[in-house]
Image (tube, rainbow, N blue to C red):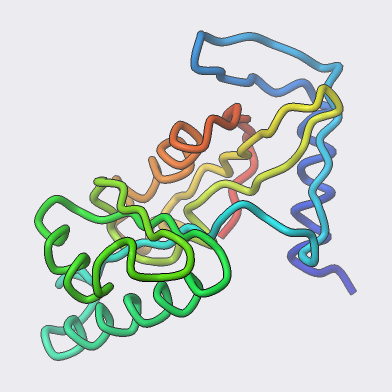
Length: 179
């Protein structure tokens, strides 16, 4: 049986072999010589990325306060074990800080990155981090399309790019779309 993780690992390897375009902060370059490897889920990672959002075109008015409280609870809990970075709109910034109980009151920091998203599901919108045979960290951008254009996703389609930029990872583009 093929798992999502195995599919992503295979897709990353395939992408590196098929010579995708990589974008670095200094400009674009093309390379087919780099092999990408996805670490196992059990390997330590640098941080957890989340999104603090509950838009009224996805969530009902009654759900929004509870969704935001739950997102803050999840972030505070994770911050007991590792750093958390959270995408948040400028409009929701102060509310996020309040619900998080501050940004430095946890064993590990919670950092807020101002960026407005459509939905909170970073598993599909965010990049998959991989290591290149060249020793570099890559962020694979899988072209999020709103689950087949079923949902607003103009902002979410930019999430992988934003996170790659903030982590210093090289953004690796692929023609693959994961949903």
